[in-house]
Length: 255
Ligand code: GCO
Image 1 (spheres, protein in one colour):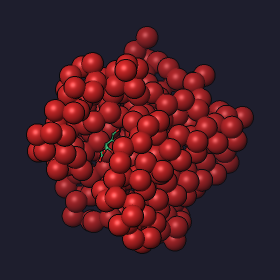
Image 2 (cartoon, rainbow, N blue to C red):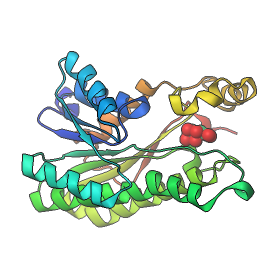
Image 3 (cartoon, rainbow, N blue to C red):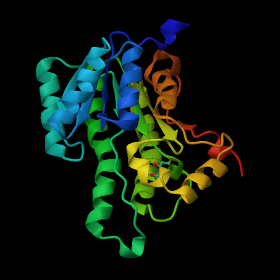
Image 4 (cartoon, rainbow, N blue to C red):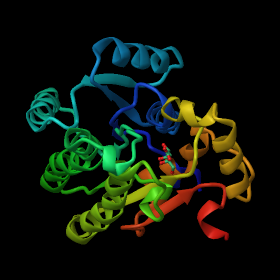
């Protein structure tokens, strides 16, 4: 049974993985045997994250590029090609949040969130899938969705629109790439204790709302997403495609 979840010999690129959910997923995939590629926009943050994983004996390397910049993505993948790096598992995790009522929202802020949280998953997914198809041995794509892939919260419209798009992009990837033995699925985290959510965690009213809105009665922890990521990255999910698995304490399943 354990071989079903073994990632030894597989290389995983996790975008936006210098901290938070991305770093936890990178660490979990590395613990399952994968060689992981840490991505971020700042060399020093990427180097620090890689060093943390290497100190634990994991196989890790860094790739510094802005996932929303098509030319930067092309250059990064050209470097992977040159170095013989073959990505077997892609986790499209990179994401930003911007909270403001829509009537006050500037177009540039809307666009920046859509570029990073949705378009980047297309750009990096396209470059990854091209190579998976050419190699002929399939692969795994895991997109990070959200509760707001299903239901909206006021003041986070661009994030919500992007995460709704992630749901349907995941299904589009499945529709086009299943024939090449690529499985594209998503993880939908509930409210997780991450740096991006600090303002919410420290707001007593918001904290109370989160705790009262899910039957687990608490925030989730980044490491609680790892099991689902290892499942979707491994042979255990070879006949699963286009799905979102919600790791939300039961939030979306109850009134
Ligand atoms: C917010 C939060 C959410 C969570 C997560 C919930 O402002 O409501 O940032 O977007 O991060 O996406 O699933």
